[in-house]
Length: 123
Length: 320
Ligand SMILES: Nc1ncnc2c1ncn2[C@@H]1O[C@H](COP(=O)(O)OP(=O)(O)O)[C@@H](O)[C@H]1O
Ligand SMILES: [Mg+2]
Picture 1 (cartoon, rainbow over the protein chains, first blue to last red):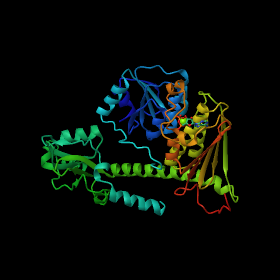
Picture 2 (cartoon, rainbow over the protein chains, first blue to last red; picture 1 turned 45 degrees about the horizontal axis):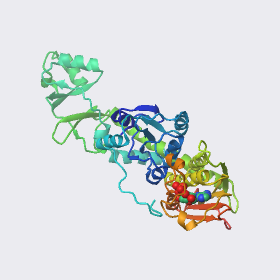
Picture 3 (cartoon, rainbow over the protein chains, first blue to last red; picture 1 turned 180 degrees about the horizontal axis):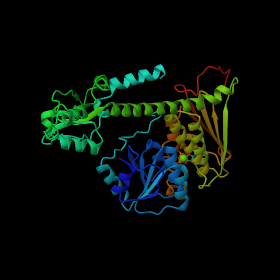
Picture 4 (tube, chains in turn cyan, brown; picture 1 turned 60 degrees about the horizontal axis):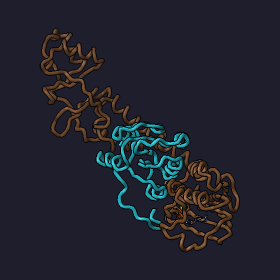
């Protein structure tokens, strides 16, 4: 699914545009816990989150997440937008709730990453 | 062309289906047309020949030389079906390019219609469409190779040019406690450095996640901040997060997934799920947590680059 399609399906606003609109996003996930993002994040994925602080962007960067979707129309801090620009993360805002944002993308064919187990050396 | 490129062209010819080198929007003449109309169409579209169709079936092919013949013989008002060539060489779309290259060109045909297995006309190949598409594919594979080369160059560069019994690149970062504006900056720098060194993306990810968890712990759980040190060698990366307090009371306990002493305001920011150390352990080849309650804490994380050492392991390190 492309970034453009994600924005359309979520009827969202692209706040920071760090990738070409037709770039492919292979998977999606959702979390409000940063450690969860670090544990299940996969390269190039889109992350749905209710958090808006700059750490969300930093965490995305470290986990290899390409696109961060801020749900429920939350307005991010200026620092969050700046950091997204600086670290090459695409930032999208949507009016949908976490549940609906995920549901709409999943229904449209965006994959998750399947069951995740935390084990030592499971990389 | 260097020999390796010749083999590349050969490989492409034998592995690329006709479908991916054909033009899909075929300009055709309907079998009801006259030669005058065909002439018009050729001039308009600037082409020198085209298939003649009856619906989605091809019934023949008409070319500029047929047109010249018609003009010479005063047959320009005749229907195209009377002057077209009906014995046409065609190719199936799932055949390989190798099948058509020898039939195209100055001594062969100018164009070869492409059919699907049901006999429908789906495209047309000319020398032009073949060359254009093969060149594009070669360019893509060339660029990919160049990128890889550049990465490898960068990677081996430092450890090849700077030779010693034990060469080590040390990156040191100061991390302040409760400074959430800068939390993660050290990790971000480490990630960028590893990428520039040309390390494998999967390894970069593992290290990034681990360093970031370690850095966040310094920000959240210490009262005086601390420092992050990355030691990068040809065959391994060692990360240390060191601080001077407050230390950990029960090291066994904090290693349990889910255990956290983070206060509510930290949890509201999305941290403090108690999964940090578990995450680090999972990402790394080994992890060691040392702490003295009332003193300081030291976290050592090791990554081995045995599968993908930075550059060739030609120089033997005496010890480490
Ligand atoms: N540098 C440190 N100094 C003191 N305590 C620490 C340090 N690092 C980790 N801890 C303790 O270990 C616990 C577990 O850490 P971690 O697994 O990263 O989870 P979290 O950071 O989400 O609490 C922390 O809640 C804290 O009590
Ligand atoms: Mg932690």
